[in-house]
Image (cartoon, rainbow, N blue to C red; front, side, top):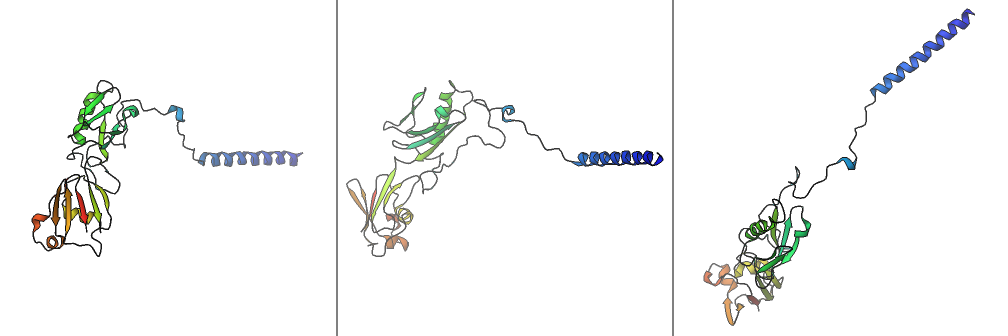
Length: 229
């Protein structure tokens, strides 16, 4: 009888110790962090200021044509056949590539025609932002040159990379030859010429490299055709 009593006390004590240690172990567990379900996250509403960490549209050099130098949005003058990349923050219907027409205008949804020829991308950006205020609250607009179609020159003959080149900034004939990879081994470096309309302008590559007759190193004009015989 007495042994049975002491046995029950020992059993109860053992059970109590088990729950005590179990409670301590559970108390040491770190609760998993909780994240709000997607439905509780706040959506971005139209015309809202970009969230922290996401920059607003800014003016400056655009990437320009593939393989070319950046087009300076503050100085490049847009012309017919250029393609502009227009981005209006949070307004996809006003965003996308837009070609400059032969009359120098671009056409935008709701707005209609806007003059772009002879203006820089930054000037077009400001003009478009003002026109959009009728439809968008505080529009954030970025305009860059996606493709230079209005100003091109050509290099043919014994040159490393012949072909058509976009004229995105002022460039001399010597710089144009360098940009095209330089002359091939058997090129006639003394009798290079430029076809400009009905004119033929000669260029002595070797003289200019030696610092002689530097007046030959004239700026290239849109439509010039450089021939390397």
